[in-house]
Image (cartoon, rainbow, N blue to C red; front, side):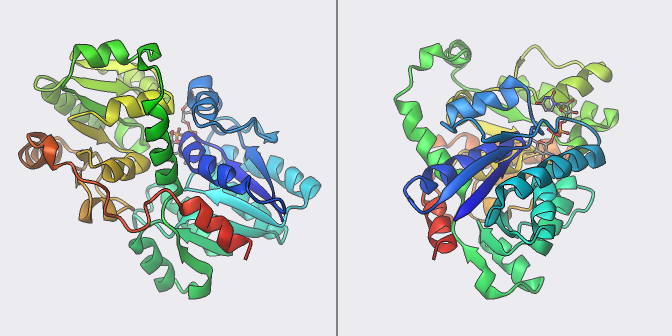
Length: 366
Ligand code: UD1
C-alpha cells in the first residue's frame, strides 16, 4: 500500500508523528508525508518536526496564510499534483484544519480512498471554520477513526455505515504518552522556560488563538481583564500564537506584568510547563484532551466543545468567553481542583492508551 499522510498546521503534527512511527514496522507499506505549509514559521512547524521526531516531509506545498478560500485553494491545487504524480492507494488526513478539508476533497475527486483520523467530533457551531472542515471531511471519507464515544454516535446518526467507523482511541494521546517519557530523559535546564518555571513554582498555563476570542476587540479585552485578575493570584505563562500577538498589538490591549508572554513553544517545552501547572486556560481543542489525559485541571475559553468526554470524564470546565462566565468557572475551578493537586487522576477515557496508531494500521492493512 502507498499512503499519503497529510499535515498542515501545528495541531496536525502531534497527530501524524505516531501514525508515521507505527507505519515503519510494515514492509509492504509506503507512507509519504505531505506538509501543506499552512503553518510555516520555524516555531509553528519545524520545531515540532524536530521535537516529535518526524522526518523531513516528502512534499512541502508552501500554501502559507491567507483567507480561508485562498489557503484552501492553494492547498488543493498543490495537493492535486502530488496525488496525480504519486497515485496513492490512500490519503490520510487528521483533525479539522483547512488542510484536512482541502486534501480530503482533492483525494476523493481523484477516486483515492480517504481515511479521517479524529472523525465524528461535532461542536454543532457552524461559526467555527473547524466545524465546517469536520463535517465536509466526514461527508466524503471512507474510513472514520474515532477518538471518543460522541464521535461514534455523531457519525452513526449522520448515516455512516457501522463497518466504516472505528473507535481506535486517540493518536494525539499516543504522542503525548510517548513525549511524557521522552521528557523524563531531557536536560530541561536547556529549555528557555526552565528558569521561569523554577522562579514561579505555582502558575497557570494559557493558550488562546481562536478567531472567536481574539479577532473582536471587545471580547479580547473582556478576556484579558479576567486574565489580569486571575494573574494577581496565580502568575500565568502564556505562549502567544501569531494571530493573538497580531490582534493584541492591533487593538492596543495591555496584559498585566504578572502574565509572562512567551513566543510559541516547541512541544516538549510546552508540555514541561503545562503538565505541572496548577491549571490550564485554553481555547485549544487538543489541550482540552491532553489535560484530561494527564489529569490537569483545564478551563476552556469557549461556549461549546466538540470533545464532551473531557467534561464528562476529565477535568475540563467550559467557561465561555464572557467575563462573568470566565470568573464563575475560575471560582468553580479553584474550589474543585486547584487546592487538590492530589486529586489529579489518570485518564479514564477508553483506548487513550498510546496504541491508537497501531490499531489504525491494523484496520487499514487488514
Ligand atoms: C489554524 C487552524 C486551527 C488551529 C490552529 C492552531 C484552520 C481553519 N484553523 O488556525 O484550527 O487550531 O491553526 O494553530 O485551519 N501565522 C504565522 N505563522 C505561521 C502560521 C500562521 O505568523 O506559521 C499567522 C498569520 O498571520 C496567519 C495567522 O497566523 O494569518 C493565522 O493562521 P491560520 O493558519 O490562518 O489560522 P490559525 O489561527 O493558526
